[in-house]
Image (cartoon, rainbow, N blue to C red; front, side, top):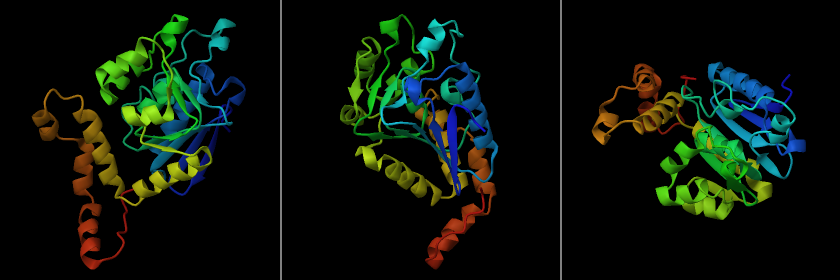
Length: 258
């Protein structure tokens, strides 16, 4: 059983709850290693298609790296090969990840949100990259992902000052998908997951891969003309004909490409 997180399976949905509320769900190397294995298993499990990541307690999604652990002589690095929370350096996962941000998301916690595909925020959510204020650097991708998700000057305003951004401003800036009342957070996150699960799984994975890898291309033409392996899997599978047949027959499609 995991020590630093809780896992719930609801059909093809996995809910991962960071479970260190006594330190605002800050993560240390053992927790990151555990989460890396959790998401390795999620990617490999053919019965799972979507994951929601959230935090235990009422105060925090994740306050980032466990600085107290570091100060007491623990490792100065909170990263593992797949990154903070086992996902910030995970570039081979075609399955959607949804962050359900229930409170503070700072440093590595915010970087984890940025690494997810959707971010549903409680009205109590608070975001920041405060590393320069403690002599550190947002090394889990924050300084690279944030300027790719919002305008550069707005990103630099956050990165160079460590200032805190509330949920409504986060929505306006564009790194949050939806803001909901605190007590509606998980209901809203599940609703997004359910909408994804209504779609053809191989189409979802092909779309995610094309978006994420296409952003790394030097031109729009190159992004469009690149052959994506998930796209080839989609076209080779019967689901690519099941969808049009179901539409023509006015029935719900029966996806089998899990």
